[in-house]
Image (cartoon, rainbow over all chains, first blue to last red; front, side, top):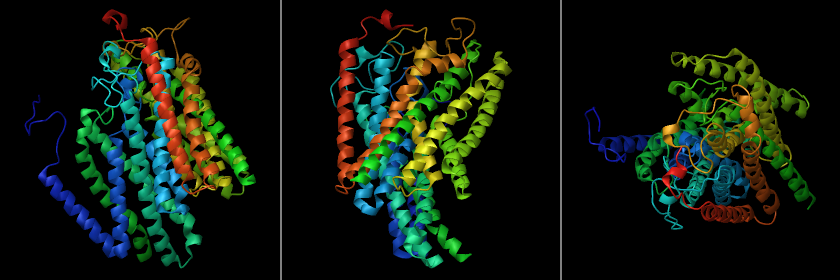
Length: 283
Length: 298
């Protein structure tokens, strides 16, 4: 029901428009062409990695059960904090692990990043239930579904009156861990792609060995990875609008729009990250 | 072997520092009503409930602590490059970061409370004087311990990130862990202490926060005292476990095999899944379903 004109709203799920898709594809192609122009094939590969990383982050944020302010009063299920903030916490912890494991190879670093993010979410989600159950005496109950899709637990009788549910049912716990894993994976992928580009560019510009410029390359790649993580997490949070219970929440179906937006945003931001040192080299 | 034993010692120390940081962070944010429970402190005067609760929500806890810890770490790093002793540099960096926190807290309280003038909510200068310094003291503990933990990760464990970047990463993670674990305890158990135990706050009761204490009006120091009993320590355990397991799986198992930390990480996640499921089932059996609507109502 709206006083405004415009297309009919369909339960919050708004598929991407044709115009939006066309502009997105054009922007991504332009970014890839620029990457080729600036750093040749290595730039294209790095940008593709950054786009995939951004998409993984935005998709992963939709899994994280976030209840916001109502969850802090036991009025709705989820973790009592903001969507982007919690996802950033998990993803950056993953980035920490991934960067540490980078010398052992691409696969180990990616897996280390993914598990780092998942570990933070596993511990946080468990402690949320510990506080709800042992601190507040409130069992977990979803407000969006009648039964837990994994355990088969029923929720209506465990939902206190006047609330939309509370705590973290097991499906939300699993969603949180999956979100953390995807976030950590995406953040680490962006970091690894950028660090490789910066190591090559910096050693060419400064005429130094990779070891000599490693700390600068790692710092730059780390800062850009953190920035791109926050950008994609906030984009996904705008798509979610407020709270989400996890993969069983109807809002989860909104993810295609966020994934497309994240791909475009990562491509545009990625071209600035990749082209940064080329510009410095010109001056 | 010696290296691993040294690494385990550093891991334990970092975990202990993180535990203190998590506890101090949650108590600091609860005294200032930062994080999600702030919505109720801001809402109460609009519903006619004038209160003396400190209201300094600068932003969500993760970005706020990302800023303060990164600032403390950056300044400490700058002092270290000036050949100042690392411990002194971390203390100085954290102290300067705390002044920024104090400025934010002051402007946030004045701005947020002044915006409620039309609902009759006064700006209490005595609250500003007495509460701000207490939140600053707690923030110092949280920032100092987190920066010290980040410094250990670089110097003793060889993490490649520079100190300010690790400050951002672990500052945001600290805020995320503290707000996720501590907010419900402050928001539901303290602000709505008059509501029945064992049930969520009915949406119709929103804004009706508890405003009176054993003697006189409740203030945020009482809330800090309450949070320090469970919400704070639980947040500390949460952040401490995160840091400990993140470091432990790498320090101990990386020497055995490059994939060792990944496999151990998966095992730890599965163990937490079992713990979570166990307490979820335990709660359903022990508390049972809500039998009648009257029992669960406000």
